[in-house]
Image (cartoon, rainbow, N blue to C red; front, side):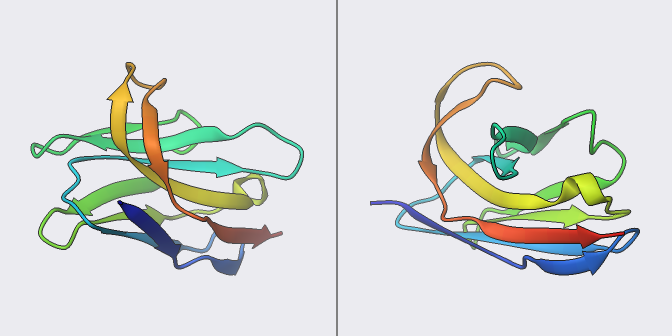
Length: 121
């Protein structure tokens, strides 16, 4: 069974940067998504990458600040986060094994456990 493990979360001041990593075991993955969720709020999509060609998508709230990238040989995906703001705080999840849907409503079947990001002002 495919398993995902996120890492790289932590605490950072507003304006700072973090890079999140997600490692997959068991199989290759060519479509990935990054999501985040604050306590009591719905999970929202942050970024996605599709196919070996690496087509990338971003939520309007992070466009120009976040960058998604993938390493197919290592079965890993990354999220570089720059110019962080307080409302970027939340639990970040990676996902893969897409079942369907069009961006931003991709439907993933495998999710990681999450890594927490706290941005202080």
